[in-house]
Length: 256
Image (cartoon, rainbow, N blue to C red; front, top):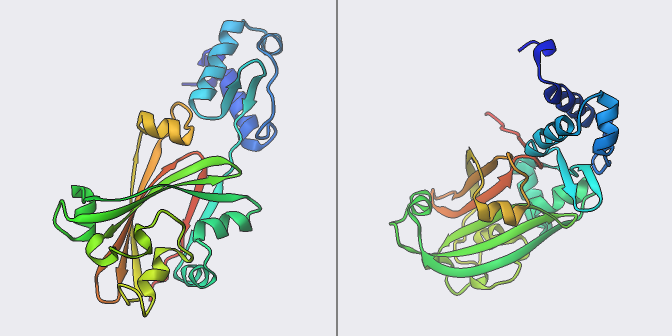
């Protein structure tokens, strides 16, 4: 539709969106009141309200009761995934998420929500290459940056391999489970040589919306990451739920 034919509320929304995306209206900036915007655009409050509702649905604006409408803060984390930085992070005992966030001047935090043993769901069993219902240990975590929820991550591990190890304990594991997998004295004693990630995009469930504070209209990326050892064994499946408005992923693939 030509711009001249657009409804007034769309023109207002497009102009405000351009200001937000360009940084002229930075994250956290308070917008003018509906009355001020009405006068600025020579329209009605109803039209202004429709424009703001459109931007809220796009996840660009938030309302705070009694305070007004603000450009939504977006603590984006750029995640760089390479074999080299996996090795570097593992040796320091700092997870890749924490290290990448800290390097960008952000304050990362991981919280363990639950650790328990359960029968493997079908989609997890197929990725772990075990029979559905095989006992697996699940470690459920929530990741935060500057106290804002960033992603939910469920890690699944074959109980036959990891039963009786740190994986069953509801506490952080220094260096992560990958350190335990590669430990010569650990339960697997194998080097991780490959990660495979499958990405699905969809709309979040009500529980995910609540846990991750996802604005209306923002989709969710679900990332399944499987870790393969030198012997060809799958020893870990990570099921990550990541809101699409606060992450930038970069994959570096070296082709021999």
